[in-house]
Length: 312
Image (tube, rainbow, N blue to C red; front, top):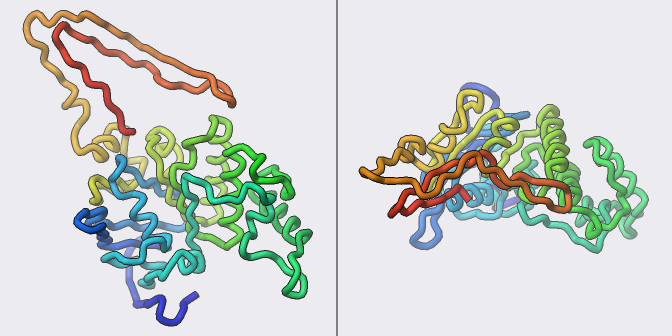
């Protein structure tokens, strides 16, 4: 995989569980803005490692470094204990790293098989594209993942959830053993999410290491075995998911105890003029009904300004 003048390697030792990928002391600046400051992350084979943080925490910047998009940074990235610096995305792919962006990178006019092997077409005598061979290989790959898609179907006619599965198949066709997924469920229906989770667990069981970026805490608590939280470009937490609860993760993301900061002392005579109890709302979309809010309660007093905020 090494190209002359593009990658340098040196020995890196690590104690404890096997680490397939590590990032140590990573810092990245854009002009006068520090996007990452001394951030570290390690990834083990067969684990789903959640990466969390508010918008602007540095998650995307770190993933772009690990996937070869950004090549100018401070710190060390290592694969299997060997320090490595990618000259570009192709180097990262050759090292077995694939990233599935929130905005899918597919060609709508091409078939499923053509998208999976785009740029790596199977050829007859090195000259003519062997579409039958590509279709057979794509079908075998999809079946391995338990995905029921026609390899000859045009990608532009597929639903977003199905297109995402094509992206996963494309990554595995490159022998990816480290898969980075950026907000993969943001546009999926509940049924499509469940199908995706099944495939993620299947990949992890086969030894693929997965970095899973999401704002949905309930989702990652059931899916990930470990979690790393970034805040304002800095590493603030890495722990086993089983050792944490939702409040601990949120507090790490925002930098304060939300329950403590929510204690509000009303002045004398602060009479409630609006009371809301256990308010829930679902709305229909093309895939069914989706919960928008659930179990919300609050009081609004005369003369009070009530702020309503969230992580997104």
